[in-house]
Structure formats: C-alpha cells, structure tokens
Image (cartoon, rainbow, N blue to C red; front, side):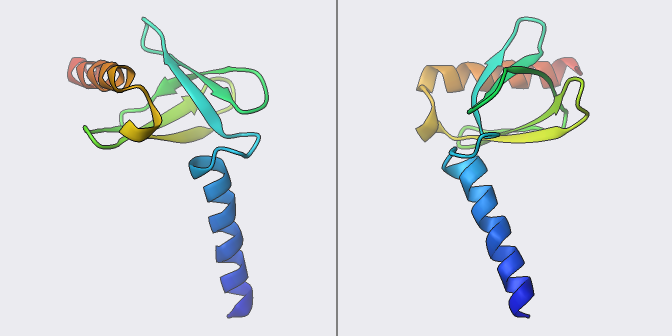
Length: 106
C-alpha cells in the first residue's frame, strides 16, 4: 500500500513539473500554429518539433487541450492551454483555428 502511494505521489510530482509548473526539460512552453495546420512546439530545453493536431483535441472558452502527434517520434503530447497562461487574443485565435479545422474535417 505504501509503495503504491509513493508511485502515485511520484507520478503527481512528475506531471505537475511538466504540465503545471513547466519546469521539466520536456515541458512544452510555446505552441505555434502554421498556415498548413501543423504545429511547432518548443520544449523548455531542446529543439522545436513539428506536430500534428489530433482530432481528439478539446476546445472551449475556458480550456483547450491540444493532443499533438510529434512528427517522426510517434509520441502523443498533451498541452493544456487556459486563458490565464496566454494573451487573450492569441488564445481566441487558437480556438478559432482549431474549431474551423474541426469543421473542415481535417
């Protein structure tokens, strides 16, 4: 029981460092949407990577969850975007692009 609790606590700390506090080297700190619909993600450390937005991404006015498939790696990254973390106009534009893209069936 103690071992399971320790594993859960370690997983929590890892997730907080990566997704909430953005201090892990693999934390995605910048997302740029290109005209062709692909995305460039910048980790805290390392080179920018190209990714494809998956249809399982979620868009709302209070929360956007980007599910991204990293090109060449086959990994899926999850990026949480909330209005408090970004410029309001940039957040609006991101939501509009993602909603129009979903309607177009991409």
